[in-house]
Length: 251
Image (cartoon, rainbow, N blue to C red; front, side, top):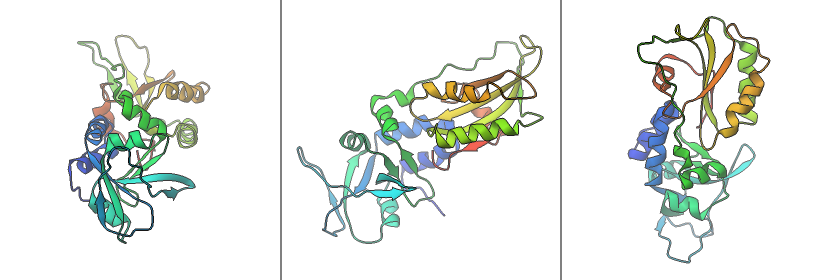
């Protein structure tokens, strides 16, 4: 399915899908962008609507994989690609829309090559700014050559278990990588490193994923987890050199 960005928001969306370090930039652009929502009702008119104070509006919802979402679109082009018939639509700032629809799950660009699910919890983090919370950096000491690379033996059973947990319970995980890291100044042997990128609040993610790894057999224990949220210092390495062992279809 082809996708040609028509505005800055779509350019940053396409980049964020594949580059975790680009996601804060996407969220920031989204907060300042106008999005489009389809109004419900019986009036099939291709017409733009502006909300006035105190006005209520009925919005169209869609069902995907047994779950209902409010569809929104990053441009009129995406909306017209999705729904071919004339509709009445609402043009509104994304933050204002999220405020008005608090508690609902939202689907950006359904039917498009690049889209995104927003859970009600993630929307709350966008509204309060916690989606931008920086994580502690993975710091390499000065004058120390820390080595990082792919494992020589993949712990297949562990990776399969983590994929299942991410898909079924930790659904705000976007992607995850595995590597081995060795610091000759502090380590006697390499360590296994699992790097996780997620959206929204993730206090429980490392803890729950860590439980899965507690009894796992790997070539080089221990297993350590880090969060890839723009400030770990390892985003560039993983994006350029590694294929994720888990990748959510839409982030």
